[in-house]
Image 1 (cartoon, one colour):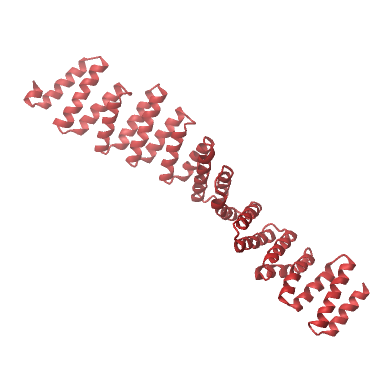
Image 2 (cartoon, one colour):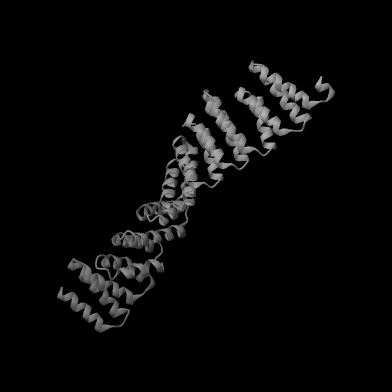
Length: 364
């Protein structure tokens, strides 16, 4: 009667009286549906309609219609956080695992849409407490935290997701974990994650250069040397000789300065000169090592072919003198002095110096 007369206020009052007197759940849901429809369509009161939908959802958390309508009205009312908390609280009271997770997942979606990141994260963590290894839930949480730039929490969630993943997906997730740790200013952890990504199948060509930078930032020279060796092989395989030579030089300097292995560094510089005899950086480094008693002989021997190729006879003589001083074998000393004598006589026109070299050889 009230509906026919258009008296919707009294219609609502009558429906509420009926609702208070019925005990059957389906009847209650029917009355709440009608109340929500009247409130929204006739009274233009979406807030009341929303509250009726929430009551219906409390009666039957599995009712998808009540849930969809409640979410729709919450979005219209900009009550995202309120709706998310309601769904999360409702999920706590639900014994069915699948239903609880469904409610919490929707709570997270609604909260995220409204910018309530804390509520969204809390809802997803609640869902994960019901299903700790659920790949989809972990992915949703990672996406949320990454988007919100909550790096520390994202790091924890990503590590769990990496452990629960396999193959190409695992590799991609470790790449993302490296990015997150870069944002956290943790180059060592970022490098470790990127190494795991490569082990899981990520492209070496794409990720090794970044790994090298992270290892350098993180102060891990031994691992950096290994990565640079792999980069050299990739450059050689690609036929990029210039890049390979540049990497060899950088690695030699790393071995000399950060690892302190000067003998190995000399061998690496020598390899650079073998492919590029006039490389100024390699030659300068080796010339600096001529004064180091632990490797001066090897440095001189590495330099000789380059000096000879450049016809730099004065430096040839200096290198030969170093060999004559540093070599343990007398035969090698004599050979070096004789070679120096030849250079003094025939190229430098220094007979006096040639005589001195010959005299030194005779004394041996």
